Image 1 (tube, one colour):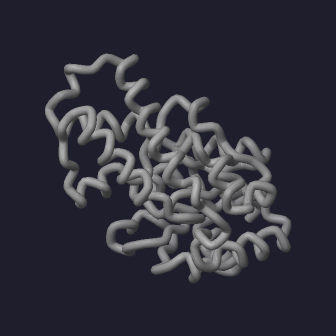
Image 2 (cartoon, rainbow, N blue to C red):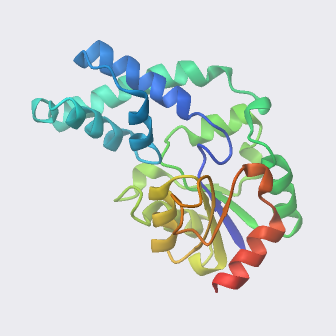
Length: 221
């Protein structure tokens, strides 16, 4: 194993609640829609634009908005989100992640971010982790979002590695599908039934370790 390609939200920190709060605010203000709590799961791991399309479909109003309007609304939501995450600190790093990064770096494993979020650099800086990663794949430069493999392929390319030499780390079904489509080994955190496509699933990020990643990669080869 030469590389570990990480999703961000739900793996390194948990900003999903901020995303959903921002989407809920936008939906209420712009469309008069109340998003049910269970709708949050449908927005997990997908891009800003794809999330907005799902919300518009939920309200049966997708045909009322063109591409430019959708882009403007997505940007408005991002403004709400950026205000919300302004309070992030090192205390918001998920359990075990700081130790995991140290273990991986001690074994000369290249670290890359493959997130659908365009805010990944800003979030990592707030968490004090920006300098720990060798690269951050730019989601605006890939053709297709998760579950397509594009962002994970970009994450591997950014650190000059063959995807087969990398472990991808995720918490979403669409993300695990993207990892597998990229011919990477998939390690996931969450519900084992939901994430059954992954090569290994743990209950909490505190269960991540270099040893787990290495053994899973060896077995999946």
